[in-house]
Image 1 (cartoon, rainbow, N blue to C red):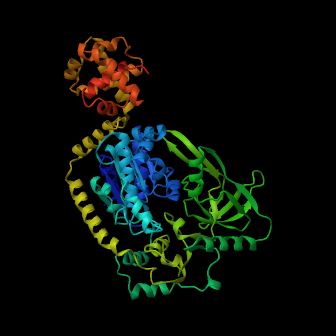
Image 2 (spheres, helix red, strand yellow):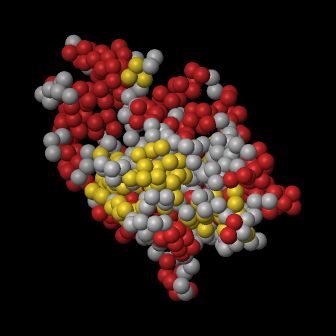
Image 3 (cartoon, rainbow, N blue to C red):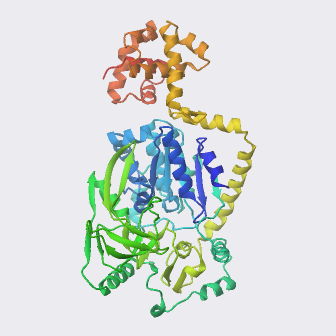
Length: 570
């Protein structure tokens, strides 16, 4: 499937599993979709399964976003406590789209917990409480980490009381929440990272479990001894110990004193801590002239991306910032950049640091999502399916690979994923065929309907819906000013009664219609029952219509509750 097709499907509001090989542009599609939603004044909930991935996309971990934290199980008291948390409830309630990146690293029971929290807070039995759910990732890459249960008693104690019981499966697609979401699979087929057809064939062979002697022979040509490996290339290791050792050893070899750059931070402490944990730039960065560095953020303006390599040439004489010469010969004065967690236009936490880290070595885990021109890899200690594949797929071409060693697991992917991948590809082909059958007019209508359902601003003929909304509200206001009833305005405008009531409510909020004038909406029966409805608003501490509807057992229609909300004074 093309990126443009996946993006068009996302815009219809469909629940989507966006997948594809490394370098196929999954992050690009999500960034485009987020920009599209924001252009229509819809703020998506952007999350990821890990802190590192969340930092890359400027969002929360999914655990933090929905309040489950480090929980491995969810019991009824836990769910009630989460639902009673003001900021979690507010966050989930106003969300229209939930994006979860690096879904391959999320356990199935965790996805089920997210589903349960969304349903509870949204008071909606639909999957994920009616949110558009967008799951992003590639199951051939790193799988979730499973912490073994210490003893049988621990395992036994989980089962009787947990709402979400531990599933026998390991992957997110094993979760009942995955199945209930009825996800449209969008499997991206284009390749934007590897520009070496021969190397791409090797990676594809690993992915399809067809890695053989001819592929190994090509890998062997890239084997190097430690004393012959290029010092300027980043080294990838399986374990942090090796990374820290190599970086410190190489820095110590350089002459002169280290310059120190400290990370600054503001915001809520737990979120700041999560940002720091996920940030590839360290809290304390030591640099010297001649240090090998890697950029840790993207900046099209300055000409670098997450993974761009370079060397510190010198330090600016005025501000002291490092001046880095990249591999392609570009000279960049590097200044601090920010990593933020933002929600609905409000920044909850922010850290600032130079977008650099020492680049003589890095873990395979932290390399996920990066694109490199050159890397030295020691894959002899690979211990997990997909770990070798992730490392190898960071490099753009075979000539950029320098491999110290490998073991029997390096070129293997999880056998279960092989079969599942066939299924995902087939589902994606079906989705593509169905998409191509939709007329342009029908597609635009579905996309506009989704924006309307999210209470966003549409765009017509390239014009902002701000003008359009003023026109449609203005038309309603004119008819209201003429003394027409809701039924008469509905007939004249050819819109639903609920839509017109929505206009009236917005106009009242903007001061275009006085509260006294709103009394025209009240029927005698509704006027008599306003005290009871307003009491329900106060009791639940929210003016969310679905919450009040449920509280009053469906005694009043949503339109009646909307009118009552217009009269409600907190």
